[in-house]
Amino acid sequence: MNPAQLPESLQTLAQHCGMGTVAALVAAFGGCHLCIPKTLTPGHRLLRVLAPEAAQHLVNHYGGASIL
Image 1 (cartoon, rainbow, N blue to C red):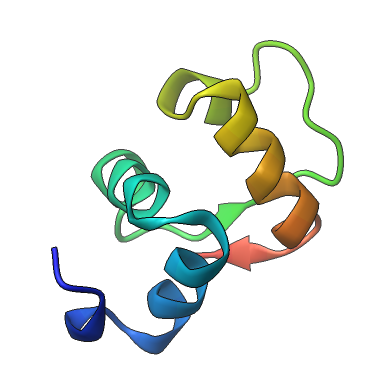
Image 2 (image 1 turned 180 degrees about the vertical axis):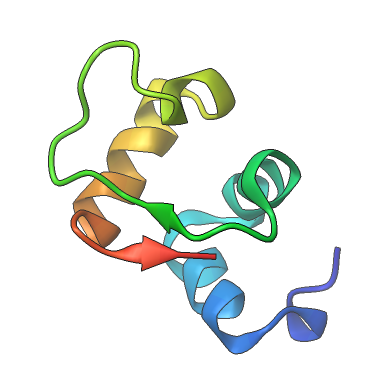
């Protein structure tokens, strides 16, 4: 996946969290608004899609926001 072909919002997400994270999120939640929690709790659906470190990084940058 070429980051330049992504919508601007996903390009920004890729810059902060990496293309692997973007690819996993799009595959799992593409076409939906995904609300990122301010605090990552055990069993959260993000942890079913992302490694714990990637999920925490996403929460650190986007907690409280809606993405995708």
